Length: 378
Image 1 (cartoon, one colour):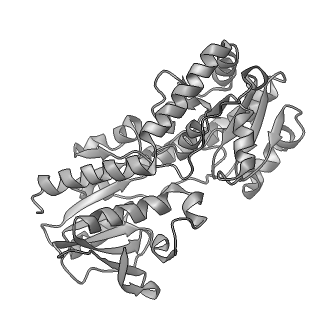
Image 2 (tube, one colour; image 1 turned 30 degrees about the horizontal axis):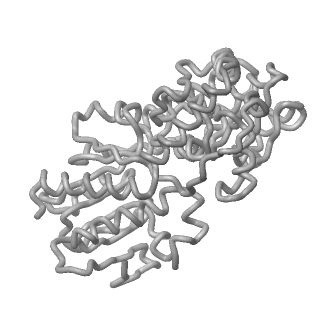
Image 3 (cartoon, rainbow, N blue to C red; image 1 turned 180 degrees about the vertical axis):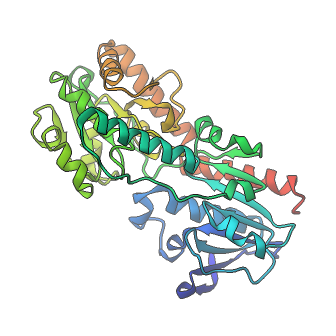
């Protein structure tokens, strides 16, 4: 992948394929990945979107398209040339459509549930918390309105059927591309199932209430015989930390670690000593946290909205109530060692088979080929 032009001040990166140019692609996602010297840069392990964005550009380069890249929130860029494809993750589609040729194929790359669903879901969680505990916390995962899917010809998505269902009203082709994983872990052969059967992990990024940490803390505070480890940027949300200070820091069976590097030995040690992940998120577009924990050999107890297929090795939370979380924890913890081993093996094997950088690359290539053929962009 080589630059032909880098206009960072203008927020544009242009990339040239090795072969004869067959067209030009505009990718509205992230430009930072293209300024990293190596894929071993720590930024590529902080979130899957950095590597995935770079690979999406590489796929079109491999098909001999020149690729221009801008940030998804770049509100200044306007096209000055003809584009064969325009790929966007949020609101640049509707802004730039007037500048595009009519035969430009517009693709929305879906990285979350539809903004109407997500915003309503977050407000519902915050309202439920207010009614349970008499406190009001601010929303942290609200998405600005966007009509991108209405302006798109088709879409790709990192999520499963749940995420797709929030966009299905437009009745346009939506192609699944499995979210990748930043780190692969060896199978935990030395896991002590008797010792860890009562130990669970909550692992997530920003939006503690959005991702259900409040519910999980309340559940484990009522189950002193079970242990919970919390890995996530809790200290960044001072109102949440204050509201749940007792549960986070003064409850003997709850251990708050905070933000953690998933490539660190400490994270692997934590996951080796836990049996399952608890993740009752209210809205996701691929469930990267869940996928990371599947790779680490944890059995998932997750919401439908977490947007990861857990098949027969996990437990699906249908209502995400405190009582349902408690019940699910007890059911999983009470299973035989052989059953726990089987579920851990299935979870790990599923992640290895579906959620790797190699699988993302293969599937995205297949989808691009289908779109090129569908719209006759040879």
